Image (cartoon, rainbow, N blue to C red; front, side, top):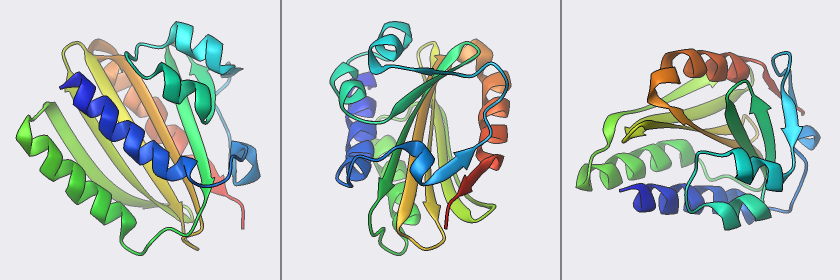
Length: 171
């Protein structure tokens, strides 16, 4: 199940990677909580709880240490099809029906000037939190992912939800 989950996440992040490589700061402003540290991909790999994602983590995105977890952000500028988030949500739901993880949830919300799909699930002692933000013009997106211990889930999801409220896409 872990390997299948990692493949799915890699595919979704790959959609963003098809867009040109750009910096997170070129499409969004994010007010990170105090003490957040930007990491190199090498630092992120050495600290990450992820398994078998090393190659993807070397190629794409930016990494941030927020307290006891690593946040992986992958920005993109690409034409996002109408209904993209709903399609991803439906596809993930159908996929996870084959071998359901514990505590799977998925929700689409509107925050500030963007829509976001948030999905979260647990496998063994780890909790996976992924989000896909699409700006209202459907030309900018920001994907994020964090993996942390289930025992820290409530606290870390609170921090990630707060982070999502502090994302502002640039027009």
